Amino acid sequence: MSINIVTLVGRVGGDPDIKYFESGTVKCRLTLAVDRRSRNSDEPDWFNLELWGKTAEVAGNYVRKGKQIAVKGSLKFNTWSDRQTGANRSTPVIQVDQLDLLGSKRDAEGDMSSEHF
Image 1: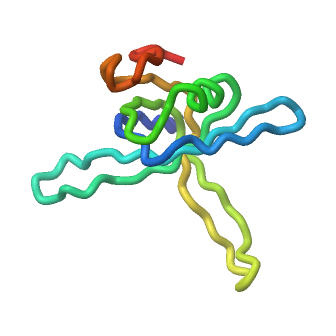
Image 2: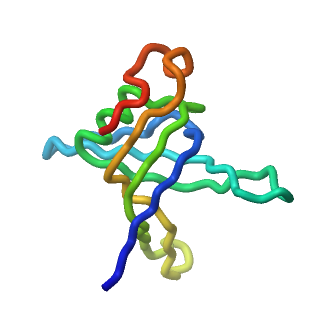
């Protein structure tokens, strides 16, 4: 048996990058800053998030830079071949299945705060 579940709570690093495909599918990319549980470090850990479909649409409509969110999903690696060197490259990405908008109504500027998608 294997389990690949990631749960994160943090602040969005920039406005969503939304892409609409001809098929009607929607993709959203975000970065998320998560505070590390350490007394010696003030630097957050940064995660790349990828959302699809209705979850991506919700993120595009309601998530903005600085917004606190919670996500649940799985870790995957996007791989490609570097055009200049031909070397294989990869980067970790959290494939988000569940998005929760957190924070106060004032923080969210009237969006659907604390809603689950």
